Image (cartoon, rainbow, N blue to C red; front, side):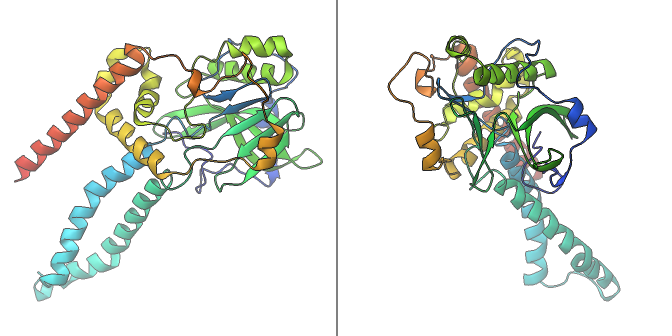
Length: 348
């Protein structure tokens, strides 16, 4: 899945470098509208006339790494443990002229096994015991952008000084993807000091991404009338403000990319059901991000207006949005457990 920018070698955004010509060519001007239909990209946490809060680019795929790590552990650990225990407890099952096999085991197989085990642990830890999400808050009044880093600290930049552009990443399983990125630049405007992803549309096109950018841009640049119009575009708010995402919404979010093709839910139910359960495990073990008090004070919303939205204002979800994914999750989980039973029965 697309984990570009996450804190891992070869995935981190390159910093302390010169701005590239490609980035200059993809620059997004905050004062220039783009020709794309507005959309919130199922990424809004909270909406008000004071600030807009969005989820990070890794939120839609959360759970995939946990699922992958569990698969790896189930495939690797039992076999390796069985072999190692037999060598230690029952001794070397090799004749004198076959001792080279034992040396190969200790010199090659053990280091490779430790490397694989470290990879499994990293996959699990990349989503568990961290943060439920890494929010981005846009302060419309003070024209600031706050980004919650992966280490729990916060970066703050000026909306008018950040360098926004369409970034591109290549992930082998899914190919090229795009997101809206922001650079913190040096005073001369030529050196990239830090980068974060402002917006991402999971399984969306470049046009969808531009529609999300235009939604964000109009929010920051528009007047109260524009904000009122944008508020109507926010039909669903992600339920992660001051709480952990629940299992049901985790299932909804996991299957959301296939919402227009209900039959694909059945095709993908086997992996997606276990990814949804892994997502719940990840969310349950993670901490809820908390903004510093000074940011909360600056973004304080007084009173209640018709332009405020959060998860409490979400409408009830319909059959295809919620019930059908839950049914497919139950079918996928049942099918997976039955498949495991058949494999164990055939081996036994």
